[in-house]
Length: 388
Image (cartoon, rainbow, N blue to C red; front, side):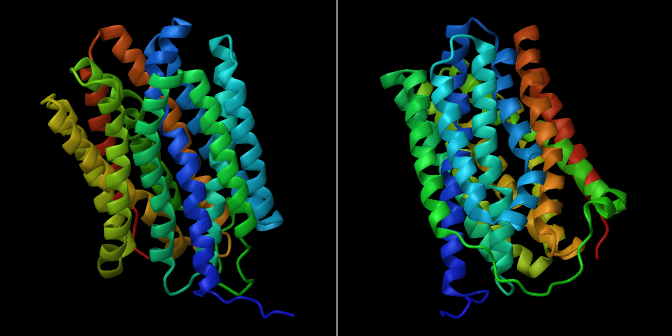
């Protein structure tokens, strides 16, 4: 019988690679929706607010189901969870490609992509955290760079495919590719070794914990603003004169910058502490919306995307480390899943509300101003989370 693999081993990094690939495919597809917004709105005769509901339902599904998928991976193992995500992602996008009405596409896209991401994100972050002790922050940071690189590559790729084949066939292609990647990842990933760890809060205790509640509120406030650019920044850029591929590439810039943010801020956190670096991420993201408000042309939008992406990358990479340090590791999947429901609620509210504001006023100014205020409110809230 082969000896069980240990933490911080070569097999541990194989799990990181599988998690990276799963997040690359699932989030790359989810965050490419900005490229689909205009052509789908045109075909269905809907405004930005109604079409943005696709992204809202998707984000609500994958963040909301994170609480369940995090528990499921502890009970059933990551392989089964990833296979469920692969089937959901492929079937959901295939069905969306055939939708004849907006509400049908809303349901198939939201549930298919939402379940796919839910099965590839919180469970895999928790599994990677279980495979490491000394290098946990680095390992999680490397794994979640898949989100940034997926956004960088898939968003402009989707825009180019839409121009060549149309949005329906592009959904079909992305669904097949995403399902294949998650299926391969399921063959590679393994449950972490069972070992004792520090006591962790139960979900009931977390709800009653002051710092956990404040962390939940801060993440929710920030998330209302954070996901608005993923949906509406390409449309804003097109109205400002950018072509469709260049406009969609701004979402890719956010992804590329987030990759750097995940790696660099992981190193910073090792020196300053995870919570202090985490707070800096909130400030960076909240203040970045002032750059979008300048309306200074495509170059300023690129700078905005870079600054937002750096803060966003650190936010994603450091969140699990903050939760593990303050609330324990033995129930990390459930604790992260519950916390990420705040992001699901925020993202479900932000993008449609911003779209409705643009449709009603004919201007992006109210939506951008609201993002700035909410982002800074999230920063002020996270400052109240005490140190361990």
